[in-house]
Length: 194
Image (tube, rainbow, N blue to C red; front, side, top):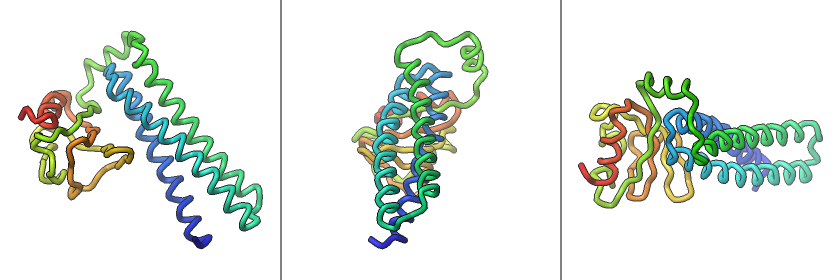
């Protein structure tokens, strides 16, 4: 692997760390506001993913630095960026942990829940779901039930803002944002009840 390819890999890792942490914070607050243990569990899954990715990132930065005799200050900046994303992931996990421990939400959060028009929700696609084998664009979830898929977990891999030609499969865990009324419809579609 050339050093240019290695730097491209580091750039991709930074992008993945940043995007995952932003998504985790959004999910953690949604889990807290809506007292949603399923979303909180997804945050914990992502925290493990960030831990592993952060370790790979640090090792790659150190390897390149040793190989290319990079300036320590430049490497330190990259390593600190990795630590910052790890801290963000840990903070999101702490928020999710509040939900998982069953701590009663503050009355202000309850007021926010009652006034919220949109929420983040999740569903798992079953074998007999109408969504199984369909492209996201074909499903027309936004037009039909007012929800948009913002992320998807397939096995151990996460996809953020999947494109409209992304094909959904049984076992996919979809994370969507949309109107509160769409939550039940999304679950029923994913589970094959509709």
